[in-house]
Length: 69
Image (cartoon, rainbow, N blue to C red; front, side):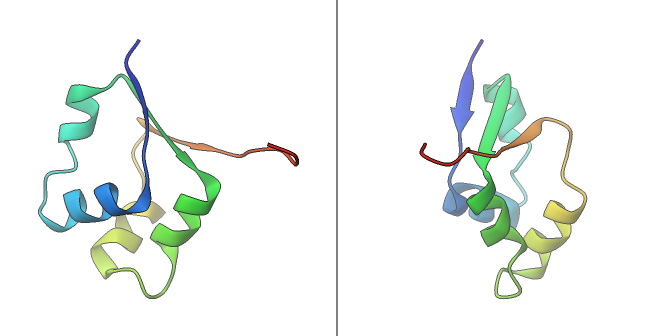
């Protein structure tokens, strides 16, 4: 299984250039840490990014790390 853990910038810019659908074509599972989720939903993020995160697709999984990780 091809898995990727994504950071804020690639997601943000793929959304802004309307190419976010490249990710599920290249990877079977896309994970983001909860802190990345928070950054993408932050009021300073572009509107397109915030809107996408509020209705995020099923292929995007938010990973919540437990204390000490």
